Image 1 (cartoon, rainbow, N blue to C red):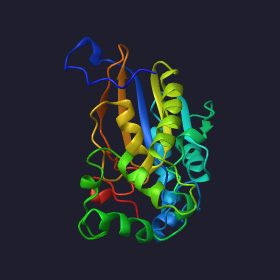
Image 2 (cartoon, helix red, strand yellow):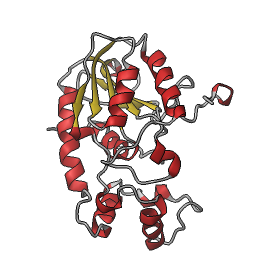
Image 3 (tube, rainbow, N blue to C red):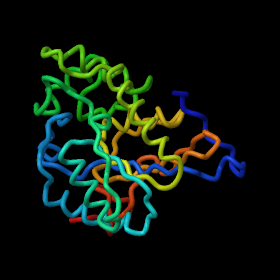
Amino acid sequence: MTGPASAPAPGSAASAPALRLHLVRHAETLFNVRHQLQGWCDSPLTPRGLRQIEALGERFREVPLVAAFASDLTRTRTTALAALAGHPQLEPVYTPDLREWNFGGWEGQPNPALWGPLFEAHGYTYGADGHWDELTADGPDTVLDAIAASDPSGLAESSADVRERLRRAVAALLAVGSGDVLVVTHGAVLQSLVPLLVRGARVAPGYPNCGVTTVSLPAVGSAGVAEVGALDASCAGEPSIPALQLP
């Protein structure tokens, strides 16, 4: 597979997108609100999460989707099916390649149990300094490998593990060829996926529940990111228009 391309020059022939990937993080879950690590383990959607997916269905009702992909975990399956409420003809493709990072023995543990020591090792305080940008300055691979190294169970994924499966996922997405494609996945893995799609794309400090990131891939193979981590006020966990924030 070839590497990601740079964004096309504005106004160039390449600027007309042939493939638009709508990357969506799953709706809010119990572990999200309890601040527990949630990778390959699962937890149910909260009442707020259920309202989010209902709004997500309305958000995509008029989008001419031609295909849909989702992680095979329950929270992403549920989110994808709701997003496709207006597209009964589409059957989503569920794949483990779009799963969240596997946190191994840290799964289900309170977030500070993992992130606290990792932040401290870099001279920061978890939850206070907010230095995620510094931690991921060289990309998410450094963080992934630090998690794997700290996992006493030896089950956490390395950056190479995640990159291998995401390359398979990207190949499947590109095989669609053209049109609007829904991709429902997870917050941390989006930090690994977006840079694979677009060279030089910044790593967002966080992808909110049901936030939508749109990646446009022109026919010639170059790529551009529109609305990285952007939120649609009708479905976002933390919408950009506070007056429309979901209760």
